[in-house]
Image (cartoon, rainbow, N blue to C red):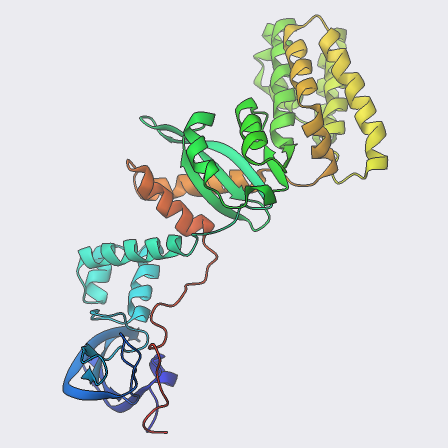
Amino acid sequence: MPSLDCIIGLPGIELENATREGQIVVSGYACFRPLCIRCGCSRCHIKSSFVRKLKHTRQGNQLMVLQILSHKYRCTRCKKYFNLRIPGVLPRRRSTESFRMEVYEKHHGGISQSMLEATHDIGHATVERWYQDFTQNRVSELKGRHSPKVLGIDEHFFSRKQGYATTLCDLGNHKVFDVVLGRSALSLQAYLEQIPERYTTRIAVMDLSETYRSIVKEHFPNALIVADRFHVIRLVNQHFLKAWQMLDPVGRKNRGLLSLMRRHERNLKPDQKINLEKYLGSNPVLKEIYDFKQKLCTLLGFKSKCKTALRPIMHDLIQMIGQLRQTTLEPLQTLGATLDSWKEEIGRMLRFSKSNGITEGFHTKMEMLSRRAFGFRNFSNYRLRVLAHCGWNGVFAVRNKSHQGVIPPLMA
């Protein structure tokens, strides 16, 4: 007789017949003797028999229903009764794990509950319950993880009422490690203290946030703090635009000039370079500041430099920071003071290639998850959804994949 294992993936079940009348009905029976689920004894007697009906995956456009002849057993050692556990089916369930996972994946892919109710012959509340069940199952598989070796830390907006949340990202594996409500040292302290093996974190990438820098130094003592390149260069551009506002308020409002001044000179077309040089030629002070900014951004754009190649770059960078602190324009003085306080982290930024771009990408995905749910009020539900879709490794740990202590089949 053909085995159902090769057809529907349920090991230990033998096929008897199959009919197609509105839906596919497959009949079979279990061909193995189980061990007692309480004491593990192999001497169990059949007390009674019954037919277990299970919904299974769809074949073509028809629902498959399994009718499995099962038994109620009595253990001769502990004198307890138990029903046969079918591999691939959880206790007291009327559908297989394959069917439940199919509904989950379809609903996550965008198919509505009402459509699944019509095609899979289940209620819309059942779809929601299964979706929550698999989401929590995904998150439960993430428990006990050690602190990532390369940590990305950044904030993102959660809700108007509860404020911001902090994202901890595993940059080495491209996964979200966790999401915590709040962005202050006090709100994050209780969570960070319970992270196992925090001393294994070697690198922490962040924007120029004094709060996050103090948090990493306290809770991840062995981590080298690396500044995120995008935020450093953006900070330079922001203060340059403020200085431009002070020198030429009228030209600062010109959107065409604003677009040209923001770009790096290597990204300008020939006609754009001519227009920009024509404007800067009429303002020598602004041209000097613009050339200084371009040189500074070029230095900050280096990455993966060895120690020998990094020395002249850091020498020039420290000189430029000193010039910024001596200037008379307040925005440039503030920029120089900020870069001076972060010069060690910026130096590591030039040494390593890691950035927080992965974390920012996950923030976009989190925003899409929030939009699909029309917003979250409960942060716990939001965290579960984020970890299930941004922190999970993509492989389900199959529940009840084999019966505890199955002995060789009777048909062997």
